[in-house]
Image: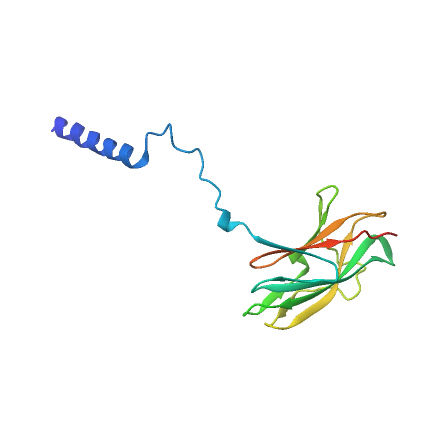
Length: 161
């Protein structure tokens, strides 16, 4: 009985080595799946940039907030180019400071005609302002929109006081 049990264990061990390898040569981690990388579409101000089957975005205007010189206002036009209704909200956006790599979340305070959470039907548009506290002085920024199928990145020109 013991010989049969030992023999069965050796067969199971041999089969597991055959199917899984000897351990020493196995990779430490799985290689990254490049198919899961979000699609990124890039553009610039006053140019309509489209994330196919998702959203088109136009940055129409960028200016300093006259009530708060530490804030820039970014006027956007968003169009649902998908086949299903989409919910757009300020949380879909952030500003990237190109010099420091810091991300800046949008602010609702002191923003005229702000983007608010809205359900947009296919083919319909939404427009309004996003406000970002960037401080005084010049800076180069990228507005990032996080869509359902990828991201849109819009280069924002220098905004002076």
